[in-house]
Amino acid sequence: MLPRGMNPRQMNQMMKKLGINVKDIPNVEKVIILTDKKEYVFSEAEVTVMDAQGQKTYQVVGNPVVANREKKLPKEDIALIVEQTGVSEEDAIKTLKKTDGDIAEAIMKLSSD
Image 1 (cartoon, rainbow, N blue to C red):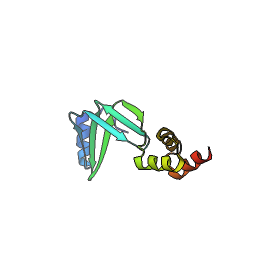
Image 2: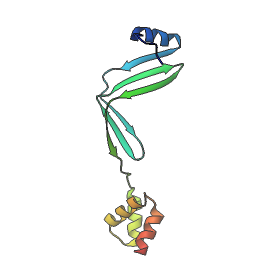
Image 3: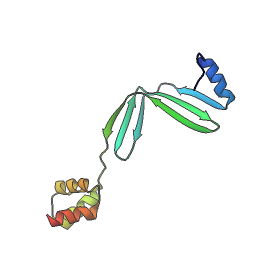
Image 4: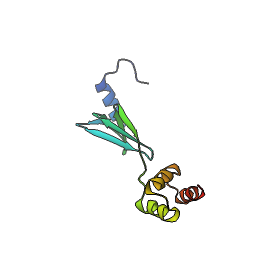
């Protein structure tokens, strides 16, 4: 907890004594965080870098737009399923999505239908 009434200049001096340097990254246009299932896009974000004894930490402030990421299905996987089951590419893609890209499971599902 910070002492009450401490101004930013005093705070920076105290942090420097502790070996912590904090600075803003100017003119940030966009920050994108990709996970396996989601994409977080921060437009007009404020980014601060804190360097504490060689360990850098980035802080992003802003309101992200969150979107689901769709896995790209390899064309070879789709072709294999079509070849093995005789279904259309569209059906192969739908089943691969349902099985989270598991080719064997997709073939089994389509073969049993």
